[in-house]
Image 1 (cartoon, rainbow, N blue to C red):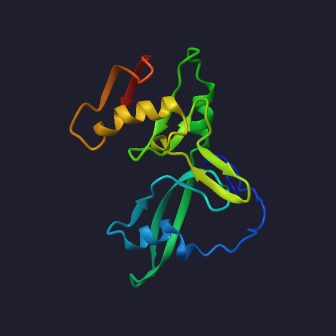
Image 2 (image 1 turned 120 degrees about the horizontal axis):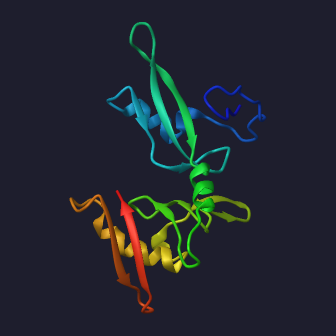
Image 3 (image 1 turned 180 degrees about the vertical axis):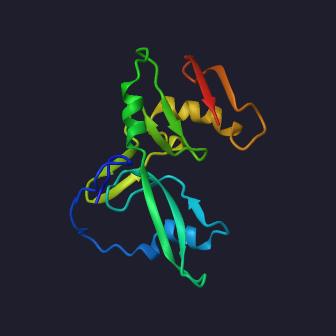
Length: 171
C-alpha cells in the first residue's frame, strides 16, 4: 500500500515480488537496539520503491512491557529531488543537498541514484568524481562538517580550472 498525504486513503500497489523480512532490515534493527522508543534512519534506498527514503521507526511493546516488534513509516525524499528541479537558477548554477559523507540526497540537474543494468540502484557520492562541480564543492565543504564553525555561510573559491565558484551551505 502507498498513501499520498496524511488524510489520503491507502492505495494497494501490489504484492512484493521478492521476499521481505522486516527483522533483517536496518531500520528494524536500529529501532530494536535504540535506547529511545523511536529512531530516525539515515537516508537509504527503499527495498521496494528503489528511491531514497528516511524511516521513522518505533518499538512496539506488549501490555507486560515485552518487546514485540517495530512499526515504521518511510518518508520519500523524491519531492526534494523534484523541488530542486523546479528552481529557477542561472545557466551555470546548481542546487544540491548532500549528507556529510558526500552522499547526494537531491540535485537540481543530476540524478540522486545511479541506475545500473541488472543491478540494484546505487547512491551517488560527491567524493567519487561523478560530477566535477559536485566534487569540487564537496571538497570545499567536507572539512567543515563536524566542526564548530558557522552553521550558515557563503564562500567564493577558484577551482582547479580557474573558475570562480560561489557556494552557500547550511549544516
